[in-house]
Image 1 (cartoon, one colour):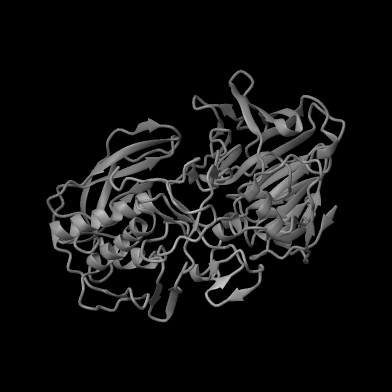
Image 2: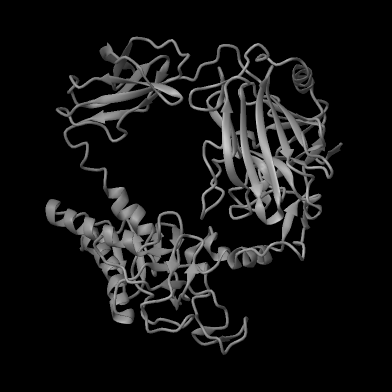
Length: 586
């Protein structure tokens, strides 16, 4: 047994250890395969490849084996992986088939790593108190995967950060708020299959590192002090190790992992997973309403999501906030007959007859919503935060400041280089044999370092969304006369200040900012293009100031990697321009 974070165990923790050793409260709640093809009992569900890994983005944290405990998805990505803490683009198995066996309450997935000639099945079977998970190989583990292939299951950090972990029921530690594990270098084998160039470049840049485990033992309990999310995993076939995936990436989860031993096939890895099940637990109702609110004469219908086992009251209430902080019941009415859909049931609460302006909440089944208004001008202040907040922060090629905060400096002044032909980018951009451009692959295309907005989640400048924003803002300005002015925009000085009027409507300035990029494409290339995007994963995964993604200097192949000559450098970090012809209106 290995554990690297120890502390004295108070009585409460010792009591938790005793509880862990006792049969779980769910021993009598045998899981069964549902009509939707997953294992379920009251308060606990296990899914197996209800969702698959994405063909381009790969790991999106909702694939393979997943567990939902007391209404929260606590774990995902349960499958064989080749490293302890995989990242988004690391290799995953190919799904060949799956089956939900209702007679034996068992889920099975047939999987393969064809490049390693490794085929196996992953089985999740109901048993008293939880599930049995087994990895069954068609033939013994290939020698090159010994010490590398293991069964992983990832647990959600927002639930388990700061909570305890227990090894074999008697050794305890706390999962830290920030990762702090020693890292080790694990170099790829010389005869490993060749990765895609951008994957190999990414691994090399990060140094092929993996964290050492926080702890290892025959059994591991997470969240011993939390009755809602306490779960225990015990292994028949080898130690269970706990890893912190945040050591490698900010979106990393906590990983439990058992290596696949050499020479075994059937039951190469066998786990028993025991969640703590609260007897007769039901998920509280979730009440969905318009967060913006409702005009007095509009229909007003809330949707209530119900646990199938919840004894649903027949009526809901609408309460109005009074000046003294009290709530007055102004309407009580029936909910519609609940309708099943997938995991839950859904009912409507219609309170359209309430028209008096004010702030309201809905109360149902012991739950109360946040406040929302009923008012004639309820939609008059719903769009401003998008126009002079979100869109302002997303403005490319300028600096954006809000009071004391600099959202980002002037970005991507080195835009852009011609993307090479026959290129499939990891973010979905693609270039065929014809680049529709007069520029050579890798050559700087002048004039593209103006205007446009970042993609919502990344720092690429994707053309189709730019066109939509330009069109929508233009029509909105014409139709509604949007004279709203809360931005100062200086395109010449490449500076934007939020909450500082400059006498020009923000919608006009945003349209201009988008058009500047489109016109630059026409001027430099002759037509609209797909967009501009970072050339490698090191830049693509950047989470800091957009101005620090690149060195802001135009790449020159006549300079060394660290050489600078005025506005030129030998660092090929400039974004790629995917120059395939793109029609503005689809």
